[in-house]
Image (tube, rainbow, N blue to C red; front, top):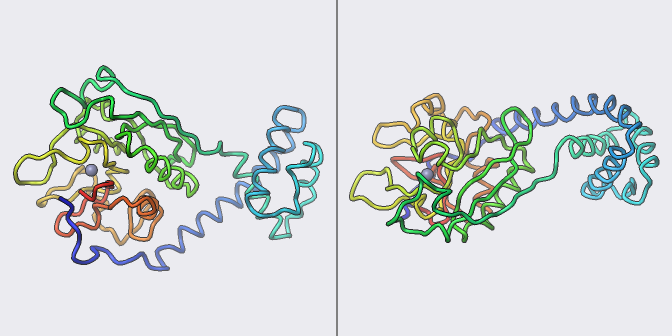
Length: 295
Ligand SMILES: [Zn+2]
């Protein structure tokens, strides 16, 4: 059953906690702008890349609402010229350029959904599990790593959770929220501890709940819960910390990349699709845990 908090375990992140992250993002953008000026020049010789550049430039310009750029309707050469006319002292055009550069360096968010069979879940599923493989889906998702590069991972979730999960990870991708790794838990022979210690983000696992008391299926056994960055977001249960390396992140007030905090990108992304956050459980907060059921 859901354990709703009687009060928030943590207050909302304060402005002073948010501001450094904002500054960091901005400084990254400026650095990227300088790198891109050199890169753009080198792309002049390659018509395929130039065409791609123009398409992305148009996409970024239209997304940013900077209609005056009109790059969508321009030829690649015109689009390139428009970019080169932007003066470094002009703040607004530089922001547009930064957006173009970010779009250039990052493939757009992508995902794909496929069915799974029992043979594809050799450790995480067995006869007697509360859901059949036919009710599960493997969702490949683009995500940003701690290396600030785009990656593709996969989670196994219930078919009825696919839409929510895709929306959440599209949001996290847009926010460049860092995720350590994302592999179905069969990669760890369905060992929760091994997956957690690897800081792996995973969802389906046909196992019982960790909490004390009578044995009952975990929400993970239904594919309706996902653990995100478990080292940065440990589970505190009866004086134990899962995983052990999560002890470095017990101080939740010191917000570091990849952490789930009230008001942060991760908690807001799941909140937007109505999923509950285990970090709000009083007594035994599970900071890594998000579920559609609240359990
Ligand atoms: Zn969990």
